[in-house]
Image (cartoon, rainbow, N blue to C red; front, side, top):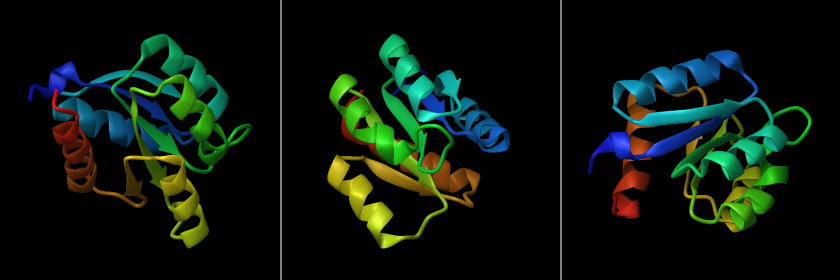
Length: 127
């Protein structure tokens, strides 16, 4: 699979987190097509860009990842969504899994964890 054919949208309110994700994913040849700092603007970008994968932070201002997740799944059903979270709260994890996410990247993360998680989702996409 050619990773450059995979488009990724980053939705996280933390500038440093987005920067780390972008640098790691760019380094692997993925195409980071956009970035947003909250769920509402993230959904707008997802509708416009139609990314293959969305990395969605759980805790954000305005609209959280968990709040926007059902709408995102409904409006951009082709996208694979990975939740990015520092929460180890079982209720949060259950809510995200029930909503149909495709995986988790737990904070603090390292480059290998990001690469492995995204590569696992890409492998299942058959791109």
